[in-house]
Structures are given as C-alpha cells and as structure tokens.
Length: 148
Image (tube, rainbow, N blue to C red; front, side, top):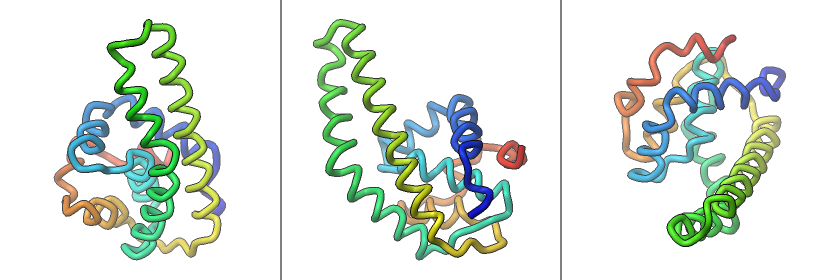
C-alpha cells in the first residue's frame, strides 16, 4: 500500500492531539483501539478503504497482540500512577508509547498485505465493531487533514 507510510502516523498523532479526550473516552468506555480509529479516519480522508471484514481481521490480530503485552502493561502503569514518583511514572508512559508504536508497525505490516478499495466508509465499518455509529466521532470533523 503506497500511501501507508510514516506520514500516516504523524498525521494521526496530530489528529489525536486535537481529539485526545474523545479518543480516550472511546477507548475507556467502549474498548476502541485508538490507533485503528485514527487509521480509519486517515483512510477515509484518502478515499481508500477496508471492508468490514478486513476491519474485523485487523482488530482481532491487534487485540491478540495487545492482550498479551500492551494491556497488561497499561493496567500496571495505571495502578502505579498514584504510587510512583512522577519521573518513574513518566518513564512508564514512555514505555507504553513505545509499545503503541510497535502496534502501529504490526498494523502497517498487515495493511501491506491487504487489498485497499476506493471508498471511505472506514470509520463506519470500524465503529460498527463496537456497536457505535459515526456520530460517536462527530467531533473529528473534516477529514481533509488526513490528505495533507
């Protein structure tokens, strides 16, 4: 997939910074994977898409990896928030971010093996996996940022 490059995650990081509260709310209340949510937003802005089945496959693939590594670490970090000195807690956040980046590499590898279609229903397909609709991310606004 030629459009999936490092620029993707840079744009997703910028979009995340603007919508951090919404992303974390969806993650904490519904279990939404923020990296995949941002990927769906990005692909919609590029008029490229994955089918609902492909979204289910990548979610399953990433969930298996995260359940073994990222989620246990995230829970440990959350438990340590009130117990650790700020500097040590910050280090834990940095490790968690590194794990997130490894998850992005897994997604990138998986995407490289997929057939991408010319449509933009990714957010709808992805959110449907959580019984949510597009109104859950209405604050994401215009997707033209994803094309930049």
